[in-house]
Image 1 (cartoon, rainbow, N blue to C red):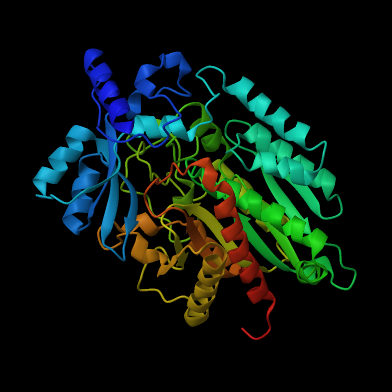
Image 2 (cartoon, one colour; image 1 turned 135 degrees about the vertical axis):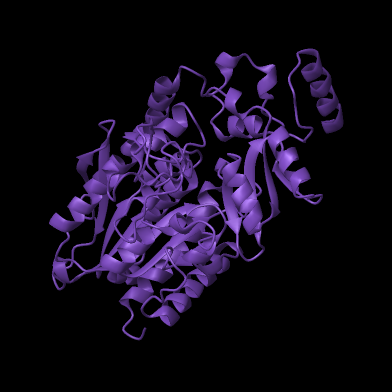
Length: 471
């Protein structure tokens, strides 16, 4: 049946002159984008047509070629010395021929179709606001039964900001003594920048003596699983708080700060315009007067910041100065004014993809972090907690190894990981979530709960380590 469908599509595509890659569709229940009117697409898919993602062996010459030819690097795998690359089929073929690569692994044969399938089926072009409102209504209706009924609905799909805001409000209403959401500023596009506190009252431990842990998600707009995993961790924590007196005692010693969506403008843009958008959405101007949209937030922190060699329109553009990104001005101001007397014991920055736990430093492999042995030991403890929950393996690496710093020194500069570790947190990690490459940034929604569960388990271990006096 699959062969018949593929042959039928091939004939149809040839008849209407649509170039294709011959691959088995990921979701046989979803129609191919080429058979739909463009108005039925969730966003404009034209930029993705004839685009593929391929995994090849990496080298210095390969990385330089990719950057000089405008091919997008999705991920690097230092342990296997491979790199995942997005580009037009013809450009990829030219690159493979240039390096005489015959064993390339095509991860995504048909990027336009894979992007289409990453959106809920009922989302169509021009209907985003209606879709967001219906998603909001779906979650709030389920909440009339219980928070747990709402969770079953909420975590079935990735959710736009409107639904996420409804979910955060629901958590605050359900756990009024424990959960507080706070708007701490406005983004470039005037969206609320929100922090969520989970703080269990305990009269024996003053607030300023509790050990603060900060969890962030959604730094890069396209990494949707980082947002859903942050939200799932909050829910799991509150669920345990309700049902486990022993765990309640642990949580009462901690002060959690969550930023589920650190890049609200970029995230919303990834829903209504460009699924693979990475940066924020503020207008920027380069030193040469060129104008473009967006700063890579994870290269904009004020620790070993350097001006990126990427142009102003590049995906990793770091701005003209540290903290130029609106979101980071808000966050740094908040930390300096609100939590100035609170020691941040732990920081975890969730990203995708690669299944890696990265420890400082990102900017250089020549700098040894304090307590390096304990940092590595804790990272392996987190990976074990994940493996015991889901069976999935995460690699442990220094963040600098992930960056090709010997080739492009600015790639590791100005990171959230280094800034928080050096200035704020005793223990800090960047965690790259699933998967290891089969779906890349376009992880299907069926993985939301499994990934959420394994990361919640890892953060539980992280919390217990921070509370331990034996570390």
